[in-house]
Image (cartoon, rainbow over all chains, first blue to last red; front, top):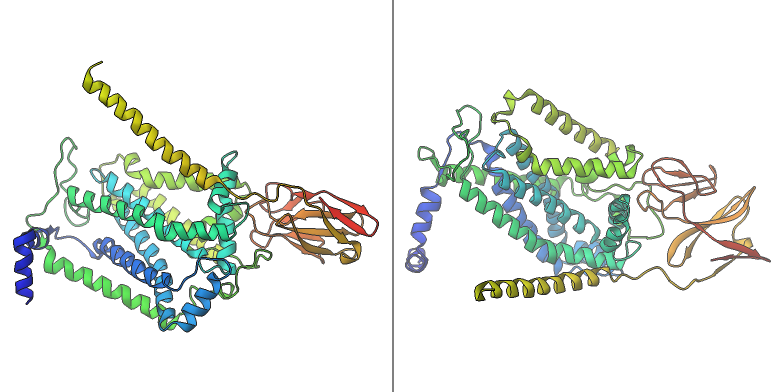
Length: 364
Length: 137
């Protein structure tokens, strides 16, 4: 039956040709490592978020009077396996941001953002930002004390900018404060506005990867891509390994590791992402004592605490973000190997250490 | 002007108007926000509800506010929204200060910033005393 179906498709869309060119003849450089699978893993994690998100949508009610009970009571206690899908969605969102961050860090360390892949890096950076906005907009939806006040804090950040700050904050919230209007806006953002933007960016990202070809790591092998860029040339590896089965196998291992970590957290650390403040419905008249945003926003949150001037604190973060996005256009050095670039390595380690310190500081 | 050039200009003009119409209407749609009650409301609170050295949390024009009976300077009222990042300040009876739980911003009972990151004083609400009542607004 499978053979007949395959033949049926082959005569209509040339399936065998696609498999031959895109899977069997598609060669991967021999010195790839496990970190090359992180992009694939991110796609899997996104798909899982979409599936679990759609399942949760069936019972979630985006209204301030019902949002908390629809999550905390209906989904978590009444609907069979509702708790599982919520846990998968919550743990999955955190793992997803971690995977995308790791993907960016490893691409950076391997110098794979360099020409001709500047646009691929830029697209990846924008995807990371969209992923964080996904996480942040989803954070408010359960309408609990933590989500309400974390959203209040983050939506107040634009007010640091003179003139345009207040209108931006008001548009984000749909008023002066976080209200049911904010919930509607964040819900629309989370389920309807961000997904098409995200899918478009993923499409562009994958298209660029396909057009430029996979970049070889700078470790252990001379990289022949340090040519002056005067004409388009797709990078290919006639001597490399076929994508299937060798690289495909690596991807499957990583996917299994991802699910193993996810279900370990769900099974043994079910309250990891659910501190006490998530068990109380949002109260606009009481800010809880221990209010903290999600871990990936803790470093900026802590920076806002220690820098006394709000405008300076936000500008510093904005500049860092812009430098991060356009870094391939600023880095004109030919050397890809970060081990041979002590200053860049030092700056990277400093920034990473600062981020980790701020994260732990903000957590304590 | 040649026919082809003319068609290009017309197309660009009509296209720009179409895009502008969409962008304008979307912006107007998004910025049509409910504002805090525009007509001035007065809120009356009895003096006996706020003992000396204590405070009471109230809602003033749909916003959380606090009315304080200061031991030395009398009554004063503020919006509770911290001027740093919008968390709600709490009155500390022991320290006789207003403290923000998010970033530990501290205000004195005049609403001025004492310590922490808030850039501006708390927004004061005008009030007057009439007999046994405190009238806000």
